[in-house]
Image (cartoon, rainbow, N blue to C red; front, side, top):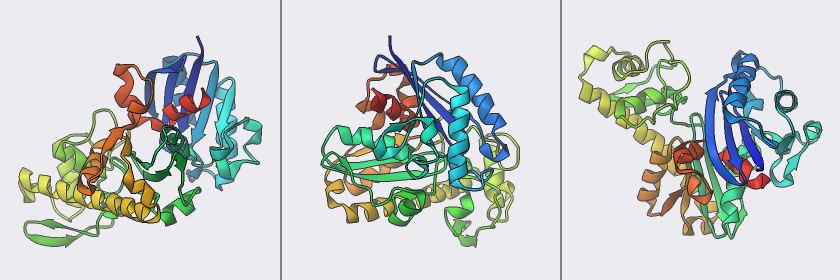
Length: 338
C-alpha cells in the first residue's frame, strides 16, 4: 500500500490528509498559531503524526510564512520548510506551476512556494477540464480562482497580486474581525458606527446565527470566555458600544445576520470582479471548499450558477468528506502527488 500525506502549514492551523493508494481516508486540523512561536506547530506535528501514521511520501504547502514571527516571507518559507523536514520523512514542497521540489530548493523557489496552497486546490479543479470558479472560504481568507478550459488562469500568484486582482479576500468564517466586515451596523432602528477594537470575530456572528460548523473554531475567543451564543452576544454587543441586555435575542440575531450579509456581499463583489476579467469562468460551475461552503452556496444561488463541493472531485471515504472539503489544499496535494 502506498501512503501519501498532504500537509498545509497555515498561520494558525496545521491541516493533514492521508491517502492510501489514491483514496483519502482521513483529514484533520489542529490549532497551531505561529504568532506565539513555532513550538505549538511542533506540538501540532507530533499530534498529527500520531493520528495520521507514517507516510511513504509527505507533501507540503504553506501560508504560515506570512506570520509576523518571521522578518520576511523568504525567511518564513525557509524556516517552515526546514521545520517540516525535521518533523517528517521523504518531504516534497509544493511550488505551484513548478510542481514539487526538495526542501533544499526552498530558498531559490520562495516566490513559488509562499502561500501556494490555493494553487494546489485550483490545479486539481482544472484537471477535470472545462471552465468555472474555485472558491475556498476558510477561517481567515477566501480564495476566488478562475478556471478556463482546464487551466488555472488567475491574474495574480503572490498574495499581493491576488489581493489586487480580487482573487484573495481577507474575510473568513471564524477569525475575521467584525470591525473589518462593515463600518457600521443597524441596531434598534439606528445605524451605529462600530468600535474599532477586536471585541468580536465573525465566529461570534455565525455562532449566533447557528451557521458555524462544529469543531472549526479552534482559537480562543477575543475575551477568553466561552464559545456559546450568550457569550457571543456579549462580544458582538461591545462592537456597537452596547451590552447584551440592551436588546433581545432576536435583535442580536438580526445583527449577526447583517454581518453575515456584509461578508457575503464582499465575497460576491470579488467573484464578480474575477468573472469580469475571465468571462469563461462565469460559464461553468463553482467548486466550493473550506468551512464556509454554505456562504458559497448562497453566492452561487444569487448569481444563478451551479456548484459542487471540492471533495466530490476526489476519491474519499464517506466519513472523511466534510473534513476533506475543509482541508482542500492538503487533500489536493495527495492527488497531485499521485
